[in-house]
Length: 79
Image (tube, rainbow, N blue to C red; front, side, top):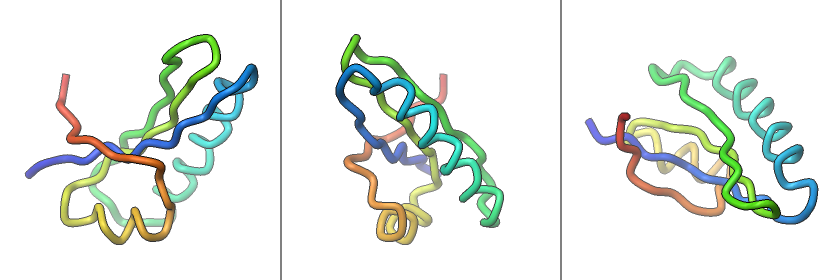
């Protein structure tokens, strides 16, 4: 089953701190739900751009997207 990475972008000098804080809320959301995947993370893309993300299975993507309002999404490739 395909996995979708839902992504929130944060920009500015505090982007990393904000993304790390946002990930806390994503983990809290996962703790309240019954999803089989528990994948979240933060990536620093540049000095002024960081992302927080949550990975869900494709059938769960639309309901989660509608509730959490990510900025964008991409197919998640396991590494």
